[in-house]
Image: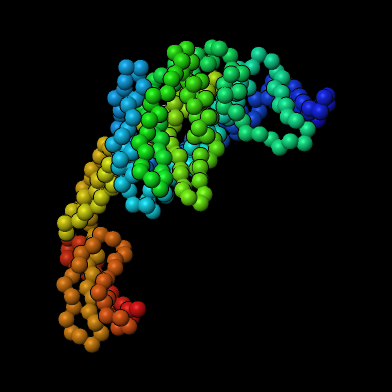
Length: 343
């Protein structure tokens, strides 16, 4: 049991066991960070795919990305149900992403601390507070902060911000915020924290007259965190981590499968919108025919490569015979007939 020192109404928990014990939780924390990041990616991907959010943006004289007005325009013109579904997805993503950032800084602090003591201080009787990104960042050594800034500068994308209200749709004007040259990343963290963009729900309601919702589509912050994981954290714990640069979806086409009666054609777009194509002639297919019970003629044969098929426009509460034969180069085999009743 670690000793607990009490003084002036504060409780100081001294986690001063051996260094090996302090690092025992590193794999768990690292996996948690990856899980939070993947959850954010999963929530944001369909929004970015539909609205062109993966496109790179031009920058102004200060090197900041231009405001994505076209992205905002497309978002404002979505049907209400889809727009508010995407709002929920974005809030879900930003909350997970903010937690991933905070725990990443905390993990770096633990890994690079010069002492074997890691102290957690809180007021007596108070509930644990959320990890503050700014405090965790400031506690890092100057060399680590410089390393994080180098990573931050490598990502030339924008974090899209929106405001939805009962009035006119407001375009994003965040690119004009002032940024200090020496520590742009810290200024970005302060902006995120001030606007409650990351880690906390950033839905603001003005009731009963109006409803206002602020949100961010955090592609830039996803890629910044991804580079921090791959270039700073993973090397320090000896883990091979493949960056999202080659995994995050930019796909504009969905997989397709076609059948011309002789050959199967399949296209499989990958996440970078490259396409893998394949075609082949199956050795055996199924030929399906159907007729209403009491009639003599079967329908024309429908050849299919699938093991299931559906029929439309059948008469309700009517019995049908279904005939299936296997077809190969040698021709059709013996038919199998099944009787069913439509609903």
